[in-house]
Length: 120
Image (tube, rainbow, N blue to C red; front, side):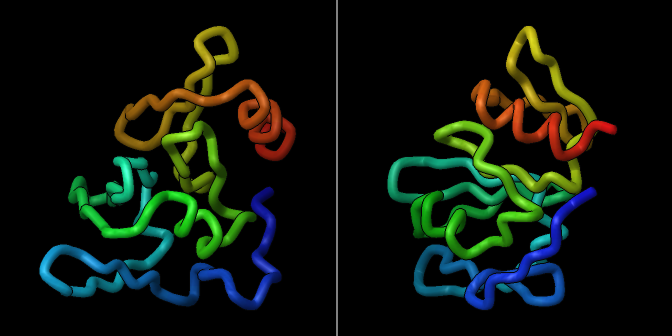
């Protein structure tokens, strides 16, 4: 159902993602604990399963290159979602539903890709 990461420079579920936070502090986060990432200018908000939101000092496209493409999807220009936590979607509203009832906008292209991959 979810493709395995085969590219050597990407972070997969057995590695941790390092996040540079404010004041030069680093935080290690397991990709499986990430619900989604949200662009915020040259920063990125990392929304975790436990409800915590971390602000990292890298733009979203840096994380898109680093995280496993088989597990994460650029659903919209401002969002990178963890496909493991997708619980539903709406074709009419172009929305993806994640754990805890969180709904995020999704481009038509990304929604088609997600449906093709996740739906039997």
